[in-house]
Structures are given as structure tokens and as C-alpha cells.
Image (cartoon, rainbow, N blue to C red; front, side, top):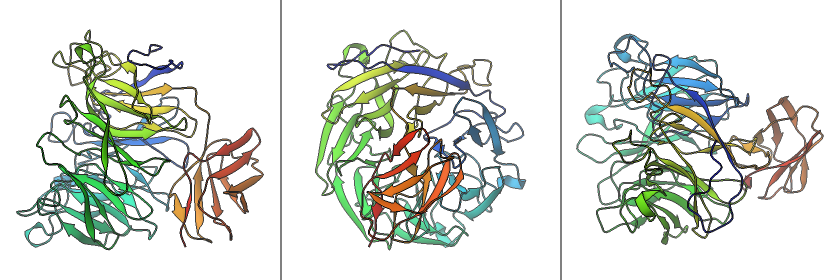
Length: 467
């Protein structure tokens, strides 16, 4: 447990860090730049880059796993299970819970043909369907190496990016849940290059980062560059999040005043401000090389991880420190909540998930059980409890009147009311962790509340009613 606020000019709130599970290699390991997601069943789902002992790579070709909130981990699929890895290999990014109840994601290798990656669908019990194998069109017009995950639009389609394609800088694509793919945009270097896991779906468009640019794109493919850097130190390679103030927040792994990474804020018009530059403390005890972006929790603060720095006593990661978990206020005051020490993880790369129980969850790429095939361990899953209250969240946070809203939470059995910004809605409790409610007539954008036997739960973000 970590009960120390190491770098802060504000009062420290009690927090409890728990190392929940270590990956052991053969059943999966090395969760990469992915964030856990919460399923309809209340469990968490994610991917690893390792696992699968019969894969041609010594540490495996990747897995999809399920984990209970208490830390019980189960592998539900191992990639490269089919001939010539036609089912894909190495899922670098995380998963998407779509409105049909299935999980969707990408692998950056494998697939039918030349093996330049796939888009896939998988059921919560582990039945996988390959939707598309990339570089299957002439001169790889459909792109190759999809390193980012997928997002879902209110049109029901899925959107994603590829890292590159034939003699160009990557693409943005749309794919239906049945696998029909359309390339919406091909980067040319001037508007960005090699988009990484930097997706965010806003109400008015899709936002992302591609090397030295941040862009906005309509669902029909019109792209606008909102911000472009003029130096060579910045790398927009992490996801963006739109906060409750309407601005976008993210991390840049190599920029900032010290060139060790920063957290930034960007207005919808593209005006960018640095909130915090890492390695501003002695011995970089505040961490450096932030990865995975930031998550705005229900207390209004932002939470994230750095892949290096922290306690100098951790020397496993080349003497660079094993990484940190941090809290950042909207005004830019940083608190280091936890420094990893190898036994509980090394190199956290993915973002944090605030589950509807209020607790934050994340993973590390290495560390944990050192009997794993990697001498430094194959990674861990952890939680950090900031004492925040339970809430409800959405599978898709926008919709039109009459469309069915899908709500995640806990303790739904026996619920008596659902309100969309004060307007009552009919609802159906599907399980203790999942209910559905059509958007009622008269509803406008605002927070959703669910009245349960144990109290009223409020959504962590507004639900956007689309006209």
C-alpha cells in the first residue's frame, strides 16, 4: 500500500494502492498501451502482448483477458491460435465495449495474407471473429499496423487508425460491426503522421493525435488540424479526454519544459497550454515519460501514470525508476500517489480506468512475479482507491430521443427510477451491473441518475442528447 503523497503543494487525501495480480507469461503478459474497460457484467477486460506458448515468438503473441474487481484473472482468448496467425497477433491497444455487447479491438500483426494486422470482434466468453485483415487492398490502401484501438460512433460504426500504409503516413478508417471497411483519410505528413493510440470521440467529431499534430475529423472524413508543433520534441502518442469543462486533456511523452513529458490542456479551438512538465523534482521523483493519457475522475482531478521515474530505489528499469501514478488538479498541481518498486510493477504504459465502484485500475508492462519468462516479470494489474463514491457510466454517452441508453454500474437490482437530466425514463434492469433506458422525450444534455436500493448514483459525465 502507498499512503504517501510525495510531490504536492496541496493536502494529501488518503489512498490505498493494491497490487491485484501478476501475469505469469503463458496465460498472458506484458499489457501494452491499453486501458482496461468495464463490461456489462461488471468485470474488466484487456489485452496483453505476450502469452500463447505455441506462438512463434518466445513470449507469445498476445491475449484477451477478463478480470474481476477483486483481481481474479482469466484468459479468454490467445492470439495466433489459427494457421499462419490468421486471427491476428500482438494486440497493442485495448478493447471497446460496443452497444451490441461485444468487445472490439485491433492487432498490429497477423491476419490473412501478409500479416499487417487485424480488426476483430470478441464475445465476453471468448469467441473471436476477424473483421478485417489489413493491407489486403492494392498497395495497402486500407492501411497497415493498426496500433490504436477502436471507438464507436452514434451511427453504430467503428472508427480506427493504421500506423502506416504504402508510401504514406497512416490512415483513418471506418468499419461496420460486420467488417465492411472504408478508408476515410490518408495522412500526408503535413497533417500528421503515424497516428498512435490517441483516439477520443467527441459529440461534434472525432479527435486524435498523429505525431506532431492534434486533429478533428467528421465521421465522413473531413479532417482539420487543430494544433501542430514546430519543434521536434513533442510526440502526441496518447489518448485525449474531454473533461467536464469542455476542454481536452492529454499527455505528450517527450515534450514539456524538461523534454521528459507533460500534461497539456487544449481548447476545442486548438489553443494548447502545458499544465505540468515532468522531471521537475529532484531525481525525477515526480516521474517522467507519461503514457496512456489522463483520466478525469469523479473528484474533478486527473489521474495518470509515468513509465519511468519515481523512487530512485527502484533500479530494475535501467536505473531510471519504475514509474509512478499521479494526480493532477485542473490548475496543474501534481501529487505523486505511488512509485512502483518492481514487485508491484515496472513501466506502466496504459491509462487508468475509473470503474463505477469509484476505484481506479491500471496495468504495468513488466514487474510482478519474477518467475515469469521475462526476468523482470510479465506485468501486473493494480488498483488505487482514492475513497471516491460509486457512480454510473455509459456504453455510448450520446443518443437521440427514443434511442436506448446503456448504463453500467452496480447494485441495480431493485432500482426504482432513472432520470436523464431530471426527466424520468422507463428502464429495464438487465443485471445487477447493467440496465437500459430509452432517452425520454424532453430530455436535454445533462447527467443521468439511477435510484437504487442503496442510494442514488449519478453519471460521471453528461449524457449528450443529439437532435
